[in-house]
Length: 157
Length: 296
Image (cartoon, rainbow over all chains, first blue to last red; front, top):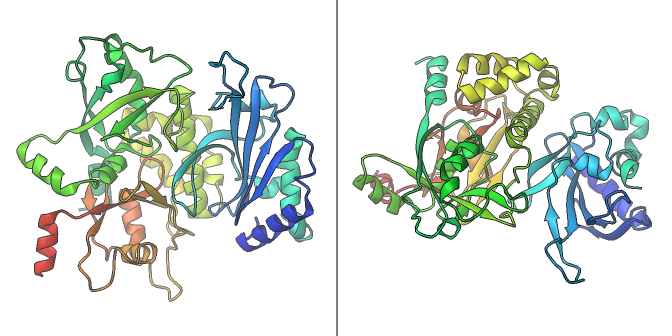
């Protein structure tokens, strides 16, 4: 568990450290107030896909970082060679992206705490996050980095 | 009236719904009225549970294939897409706040109140609508996902839901679909504590646009007194609900206009929905209600 303020501090440190920007699969990184938006390449097994849209944000309910994900694929209806892409919601996204089944990845309605609008994302359910990341005091300063290595880098890189 | 009596009335709440198809999806010579589907559905259920049956009824009147995997299906009310992930009654309460004066007139003309919805289909879903890719299993999974959240808010942990046996989980889902209140309450009581950490609340505001609020809501305030509905509402919407002012809005849950002085956790215990949340809709008052308030 991580407090909102500590999460925000570590999120800005993460952005400044360029840990994300330096990953070869990461194409775009954008820092918002309390979240980071990412565009990344897709795992090599998913060749029909275009890219992934990811959001690192904070769950006020669980008081944990929360990973949101959307899949963009090459638009199959286009017969020319233009780079048309469209949002796609495959049924078994874990298998498609090679994400371990131990992560509970499901389609979810996420309400933005700023716009109060409902958005549709796949989300990794955060209820066991503290047990997975390690809740001991010695990990508190690096909590977000440890979370990132488990919840994102373990399957993306 | 006991809490069980109130829960039973809430559980039995139902809506008359008529679903027509967008004219652009209909085959030539078919009119929306000819293939209208009329249903009486519980307020406390997801509308999408009825989609397979609705689709079967209208399939032969369409010029499109509703099974096309490249297309999405959703429901609309007055061209506003409905988020199926909230109970039908919550959507109804929020949406009839769109034009209350106009609706009041229409209601006077018709003895039977019918909520008229449209079935829509397209290659791109309206923003915020969850695509249905996994049928009833997806809806069941979403329901349990919501209960894990509600459980965490109430108890500080999702363990009470995570530790339900397979049999209990199945029994819970079946209770929603078959409208078996006894089994529903049996499982819900395993999750809902006597004194919660926080109260699971979702507030729906329709005007000027559909917005949702999930405030962190304490059971008791710093001074030890219990949170009332007015505490939550004034903190969340200070401009809409000002002290000592005639308000243009009201708070509705399960079709009931709630007195703002009510204890919030008491309201939760009486009115929580199938997903473990207390859903509150901010509705505009009608012209006649305003005139009555202003004359006090």
